[in-house]
Image 1 (cartoon, one colour):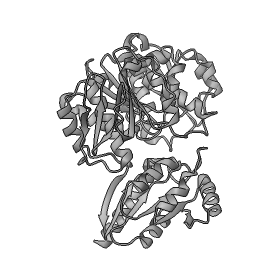
Image 2: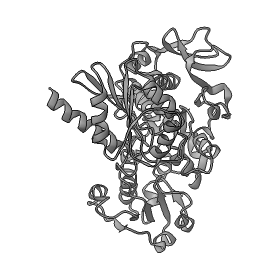
Image 3: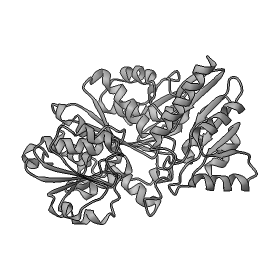
Image 4: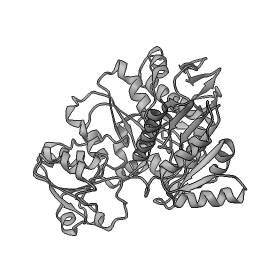
Length: 471
């Protein structure tokens, strides 16, 4: 793969389509401008919505076209850098001579090993845990991708051999197929992992098969010396057939099977990895690890197995995995206050994730859920409602479907509420000493919140306000 750097970008006319609010567009614009490109940033949102991102680029000679897209910019551009939030069927992309993304630009420039993680749920936790485990033996390891840190933001700091952990969404993976390198970009992945495939983003994809196909790009150019980790627990993952089955690990959240080949699972409380050349599995995830719940321990097992296969010693993997503190918005214990525990799981945007969150606790759970629709099934809310002590629903298009489901089953709920504060107060009023108030929406955040992180931050603020009063 050719290096995309100063030689190729110097003097090139680059259009960055979609500035975004999480840094990807800004990082792409800066990367190209600092390499000498003539950069235009275009976004349908206006200066007010994008003020923070624009400010980060104020020291560079970048032209902004906001509130609209001009077809002339796309026709005259040498390169269009597509933000993953931009749909691939947007007509303006057909005007582009060449499409790149921040991920494709990075993969063509970086010469060190890349460990790539995707999946419907768990990819952020897995990628963060893998970065945490690697950091002791590889203190120069970097983490980026869908986790809101574009790898282009640190590309200029890399010397060439540092390992990089990338969390990749289905959009980011599928968009690679639009670029000149296409799926060949994934040949850079020393280790790849798909944590699971569940119904998601069906407001974007025509079918689950299309969604699963984008996820499969992560291992589509697997090298004979690379490792791939796949779930053994869902039917889409079980249908995957990487090119090198002898370098493929099947991971289960259940008991370790010890079957032929490489596999990972749980045995006597430990997360273990079995390999063909060993009689006994390797213990990696201690029963005493800080990860809570079956799905979080499974995420940790993915990360631990990936680190071991990358070359980190089993002893280091065990120690680092045991101490991994978790990440924000994923079953995050915000506070214990007034006899209640408050847990922020705002990143749960499908019903199955909410069900898994409720099932993670032995104590009674008072669930705050609901939100906007992205075309995925909501049936898991029936079981989540039955397992929770109470459920408090936020208004939204997906909530309308949840309400219809719960009404048809004769299940009780509170709401829907037009504000998070109202749902929070309802959950707190219902909860008793020793119980849990859990924000795990199982739906998208659009409409009531800027994004799922804003939703989680608002929940944190409500917890902090209550704690100040109670204490």
